[in-house]
Structure formats: C-alpha cells, structure tokens
Figure (cartoon, one colour):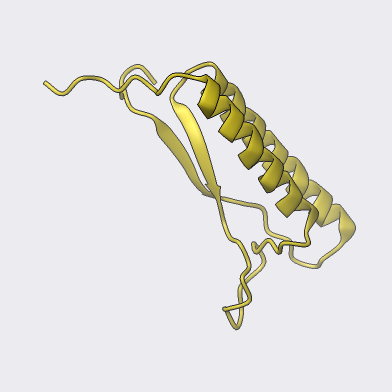
Length: 103
C-alpha cells in the first residue's frame, strides 16, 4: 500500500454458479460478502483498497452470458446493493485517499 501511494480497485471478481443449486448461490454469497468486508474495512481505515467491481451484472443483452452473471433478483445482487450503500457512507465520512505526490 505504502509503496504505490495510490488507491486500489479490486476488479472482475466473482464466483461461478454452474448448476444453479442453492448451495452454489450460498457459496457465491459468501465469496461476495468476504470481498465486500475486505474492501469496506480497508476503505474505512484509509488503506489502499478503496473499491471493487464484480463480474458480471446480467442485463439480458447477451445470448450466452455464462455462469458468473448476477441478476437483479439474486440474493447476491442484494449483497452488492447493501455493499454500495455502506461504501457510500464510508466514503462520505472518510477523507480522500492520500496519493503520493508526483516527483
């Protein structure tokens, strides 16, 4: 964190759901909850990890979206919405990440 002096963004994380079993959705929720917790703790403490972007939001435009898509009706989407709300609160309360000055 200190070596870069710049905020970090965790991008394109996700958990595949191959067969649609409830246990797979539950495991995906666990993965997202863990990532969200790491990001929120880092952001709240002013550390480098300041945000995340998951893969992928299903918007019904793809003929074959794959096994990583999250639909608005999924339990995982509810976790993403709650995470976004918490991050909004954290970022409003915290000062901006102090980027290192350019030499």
